[in-house]
Image 1 (cartoon, helix red, strand yellow):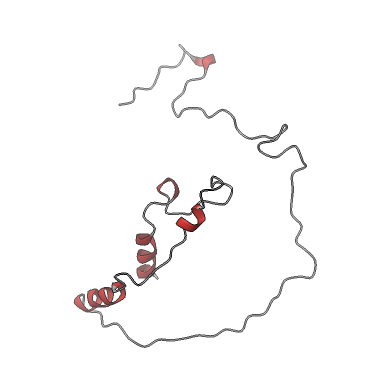
Image 2: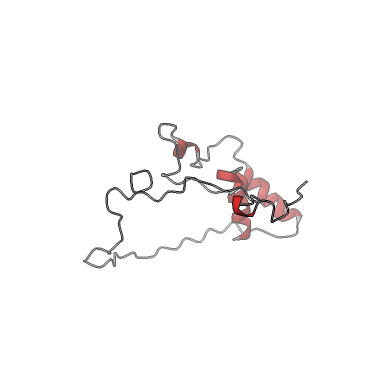
Length: 126
């Protein structure tokens, strides 16, 4: 699991805000088709990474097995007949609407409020 995790993390270079994560549909600008760019498609160009990885394991003294174990599990839908209840905002209260509660002011990390100017010493940041 750790080996696969390393491969997965190494493929997606930076991700959104260097988080190694894809953006959600709500965060993406419309029309740029970022979901296509954020989807990993592995093609056959220099597709010797598994052979290279096996060679690395052998160099470390680990003998990789060529045996493939395939497990088939029966799947059954077990969702309840009734729909799950969810909360939903009334029209007009969503983020960008008239009564929405989206934050419009983002304070700086070390910003001193106007009420405390002169009472609190400004932080010395290099």
